[in-house]
Length: 215
Image (cartoon, rainbow, N blue to C red; front, side):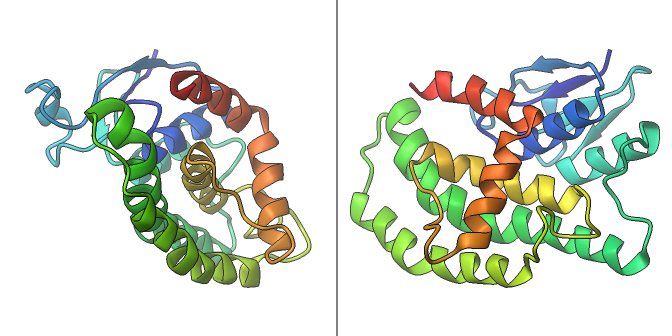
Protein backbone atom coordinates (compact mmCIF):
# COMPACT_ATOMS: atom_id res chain seq x y z
CA UNK A 1 0.00 0.00 0.00
CA UNK A 2 1.32 3.51 -0.78
CA UNK A 3 2.42 5.72 2.11
CA UNK A 4 2.06 9.48 2.48
CA UNK A 5 4.57 11.06 4.86
CA UNK A 6 3.43 14.27 6.55
CA UNK A 7 0.91 15.77 8.95
CA UNK A 8 -2.71 16.86 8.67
CA UNK A 9 -2.28 20.61 9.01
CA UNK A 10 -0.11 20.88 5.90
CA UNK A 11 -2.12 22.00 2.85
CA UNK A 12 0.39 20.14 0.69
CA UNK A 13 -0.11 16.86 2.51
CA UNK A 14 -3.85 17.48 2.33
CA UNK A 15 -3.63 18.07 -1.43
CA UNK A 16 -2.06 14.64 -1.98
CA UNK A 17 -4.52 12.95 0.38
CA UNK A 18 -7.48 14.49 -1.46
CA UNK A 19 -6.08 13.36 -4.82
CA UNK A 20 -5.78 9.82 -3.45
CA UNK A 21 -9.24 9.90 -1.88
CA UNK A 22 -10.92 11.23 -5.02
CA UNK A 23 -9.23 8.46 -7.01
CA UNK A 24 -10.21 5.91 -4.34
CA UNK A 25 -6.61 4.83 -3.75
CA UNK A 26 -6.02 3.32 -0.31
CA UNK A 27 -2.86 4.50 1.47
CA UNK A 28 -1.16 4.76 4.84
CA UNK A 29 -0.33 8.08 6.53
CA UNK A 30 3.00 8.26 8.35
CA UNK A 31 3.13 11.40 10.55
CA UNK A 32 6.24 13.48 9.90
CA UNK A 33 6.62 17.06 11.13
CA UNK A 34 8.93 19.66 9.63
CA UNK A 35 11.53 20.95 12.06
CA UNK A 36 13.78 19.58 14.79
CA UNK A 37 11.62 16.48 15.27
CA UNK A 38 11.99 15.44 11.64
CA UNK A 39 13.83 12.09 11.43
CA UNK A 40 17.24 12.38 9.80
CA UNK A 41 16.40 9.57 7.39
CA UNK A 42 13.48 11.59 6.04
CA UNK A 43 16.03 13.88 4.38
CA UNK A 44 16.91 11.05 2.01
CA UNK A 45 13.25 10.87 1.03
CA UNK A 46 12.72 14.63 0.79
CA UNK A 47 16.06 16.39 0.23
CA UNK A 48 14.48 19.82 0.73
CA UNK A 49 13.19 18.74 4.13
CA UNK A 50 9.58 19.45 3.21
CA UNK A 51 6.39 17.42 3.45
CA UNK A 52 4.85 15.46 1.93
CA UNK A 53 6.90 12.57 0.64
CA UNK A 54 5.33 9.55 -0.97
CA UNK A 55 6.30 5.89 -1.29
CA UNK A 56 4.47 3.84 -3.90
CA UNK A 57 3.62 0.14 -3.86
CA UNK A 58 7.02 -0.71 -5.31
CA UNK A 59 8.87 1.21 -2.58
CA UNK A 60 9.84 4.09 -4.87
CA UNK A 61 9.94 7.48 -3.19
CA UNK A 62 8.97 10.95 -4.42
CA UNK A 63 8.81 14.35 -2.73
CA UNK A 64 6.81 17.55 -3.36
CA UNK A 65 3.02 17.62 -3.54
CA UNK A 66 2.91 18.70 -7.18
CA UNK A 67 5.31 15.97 -8.30
CA UNK A 68 3.47 13.36 -6.23
CA UNK A 69 0.05 14.42 -7.54
CA UNK A 70 1.26 14.27 -11.15
CA UNK A 71 2.69 10.80 -10.53
CA UNK A 72 -0.54 9.55 -8.98
CA UNK A 73 -2.39 10.87 -12.03
CA UNK A 74 -0.22 8.76 -14.31
CA UNK A 75 -0.52 5.63 -12.20
CA UNK A 76 -4.24 6.09 -11.42
CA UNK A 77 -5.61 8.10 -14.37
CA UNK A 78 -9.30 8.05 -13.45
CA UNK A 79 -10.83 10.43 -12.63
CA UNK A 80 -8.50 12.76 -14.48
CA UNK A 81 -7.36 15.91 -12.65
CA UNK A 82 -5.18 17.26 -15.46
CA UNK A 83 -7.35 18.44 -18.41
CA UNK A 84 -6.74 17.05 -21.89
CA UNK A 85 -7.14 20.46 -23.54
CA UNK A 86 -3.75 22.20 -23.67
CA UNK A 87 -4.96 25.58 -22.42
CA UNK A 88 -7.10 24.10 -19.66
CA UNK A 89 -4.15 21.92 -18.65
CA UNK A 90 -1.92 24.98 -18.35
CA UNK A 91 -4.61 26.86 -16.42
CA UNK A 92 -4.96 23.98 -13.96
CA UNK A 93 -1.20 24.05 -13.37
CA UNK A 94 -1.34 27.82 -12.96
CA UNK A 95 -3.97 27.62 -10.22
CA UNK A 96 -1.94 24.91 -8.51
CA UNK A 97 1.11 27.18 -8.54
CA UNK A 98 -0.95 30.21 -7.43
CA UNK A 99 -2.26 28.23 -4.48
CA UNK A 100 1.03 26.61 -3.53
CA UNK A 101 3.05 29.84 -3.74
CA UNK A 102 0.66 32.77 -3.46
CA UNK A 103 -2.16 31.63 -1.19
CA UNK A 104 0.05 29.76 1.29
CA UNK A 105 2.19 32.87 1.81
CA UNK A 106 -0.86 34.65 3.24
CA UNK A 107 -3.25 31.92 4.40
CA UNK A 108 -0.50 29.89 6.04
CA UNK A 109 2.36 32.16 7.01
CA UNK A 110 0.37 35.26 7.99
CA UNK A 111 -2.86 33.80 9.37
CA UNK A 112 -3.00 30.06 10.09
CA UNK A 113 0.49 29.62 11.54
CA UNK A 114 0.48 32.61 13.93
CA UNK A 115 -3.16 32.17 14.91
CA UNK A 116 -3.37 28.36 15.26
CA UNK A 117 -0.02 26.59 15.11
CA UNK A 118 2.26 28.93 17.05
CA UNK A 119 0.08 29.22 20.17
CA UNK A 120 -0.97 25.56 20.27
CA UNK A 121 2.24 23.77 19.39
CA UNK A 122 5.02 26.27 20.17
CA UNK A 123 3.55 28.23 23.09
CA UNK A 124 3.91 31.53 21.27
CA UNK A 125 1.13 34.10 21.67
CA UNK A 126 -0.65 35.23 18.54
CA UNK A 127 -0.04 38.78 17.35
CA UNK A 128 -3.72 39.47 16.73
CA UNK A 129 -3.03 42.88 15.20
CA UNK A 130 -0.68 41.40 12.59
CA UNK A 131 -3.17 38.64 11.74
CA UNK A 132 -6.00 41.15 11.41
CA UNK A 133 -3.83 43.33 9.18
CA UNK A 134 -3.28 40.33 6.87
CA UNK A 135 -7.02 39.60 6.85
CA UNK A 136 -7.89 43.21 6.06
CA UNK A 137 -5.14 43.98 3.53
CA UNK A 138 -3.74 40.76 2.05
CA UNK A 139 -6.82 38.57 1.67
CA UNK A 140 -9.07 40.90 -0.39
CA UNK A 141 -6.83 41.02 -3.50
CA UNK A 142 -6.58 37.22 -3.47
CA UNK A 143 -10.33 36.83 -3.09
CA UNK A 144 -10.92 39.47 -5.79
CA UNK A 145 -8.75 37.54 -8.24
CA UNK A 146 -10.40 34.21 -7.49
CA UNK A 147 -13.85 35.80 -7.80
CA UNK A 148 -12.86 37.07 -11.25
CA UNK A 149 -11.74 33.61 -12.36
CA UNK A 150 -14.83 31.67 -11.30
CA UNK A 151 -17.61 31.21 -13.81
CA UNK A 152 -21.10 29.92 -13.20
CA UNK A 153 -19.99 26.36 -12.42
CA UNK A 154 -18.33 24.86 -9.36
CA UNK A 155 -14.87 24.41 -10.90
CA UNK A 156 -12.06 26.65 -12.09
CA UNK A 157 -11.07 24.86 -15.30
CA UNK A 158 -12.78 22.76 -17.93
CA UNK A 159 -16.02 22.07 -16.09
CA UNK A 160 -14.52 19.38 -13.85
CA UNK A 161 -12.50 19.03 -10.67
CA UNK A 162 -8.82 19.57 -11.46
CA UNK A 163 -5.52 19.75 -9.64
CA UNK A 164 -6.05 23.51 -9.63
CA UNK A 165 -9.25 23.20 -7.59
CA UNK A 166 -7.75 20.66 -5.21
CA UNK A 167 -4.75 22.92 -4.58
CA UNK A 168 -6.80 26.08 -4.02
CA UNK A 169 -9.39 24.37 -1.83
CA UNK A 170 -6.65 22.74 0.25
CA UNK A 171 -5.28 26.16 1.14
CA UNK A 172 -8.75 27.38 2.11
CA UNK A 173 -9.00 24.61 4.72
CA UNK A 174 -6.18 26.26 6.68
CA UNK A 175 -7.99 29.57 6.51
CA UNK A 176 -11.11 27.81 7.78
CA UNK A 177 -9.19 26.37 10.73
CA UNK A 178 -8.15 29.93 11.58
CA UNK A 179 -11.82 30.96 11.69
CA UNK A 180 -11.70 33.01 8.49
CA UNK A 181 -14.17 32.55 5.62
CA UNK A 182 -14.89 34.64 2.51
CA UNK A 183 -17.67 37.20 2.91
CA UNK A 184 -20.48 35.83 0.72
CA UNK A 185 -21.83 39.33 0.14
CA UNK A 186 -18.56 40.68 -1.22
CA UNK A 187 -17.28 37.46 -2.84
CA UNK A 188 -20.35 35.31 -3.57
CA UNK A 189 -18.64 33.06 -6.12
CA UNK A 190 -15.66 32.41 -3.86
CA UNK A 191 -17.87 31.64 -0.87
CA UNK A 192 -20.01 29.22 -2.89
CA UNK A 193 -16.95 27.62 -4.50
CA UNK A 194 -15.25 26.97 -1.18
CA UNK A 195 -18.42 25.69 0.50
CA UNK A 196 -19.14 23.27 -2.35
CA UNK A 197 -15.55 22.08 -2.54
CA UNK A 198 -15.25 21.47 1.18
CA UNK A 199 -18.54 19.55 1.14
CA UNK A 200 -17.01 16.91 -1.15
CA UNK A 201 -16.43 13.69 0.86
CA UNK A 202 -12.67 13.76 0.26
CA UNK A 203 -12.38 17.22 1.83
CA UNK A 204 -15.14 16.81 4.40
CA UNK A 205 -13.48 13.74 5.93
CA UNK A 206 -10.12 15.45 6.29
CA UNK A 207 -11.63 18.67 7.62
CA UNK A 208 -13.41 16.66 10.33
CA UNK A 209 -10.22 14.78 11.15
CA UNK A 210 -8.20 17.97 11.40
CA UNK A 211 -10.83 19.96 13.29
CA UNK A 212 -10.80 17.34 16.05
CA UNK A 213 -7.07 17.92 16.31
CA UNK A 214 -7.52 21.64 16.88
CA UNK A 215 -10.54 21.48 19.19
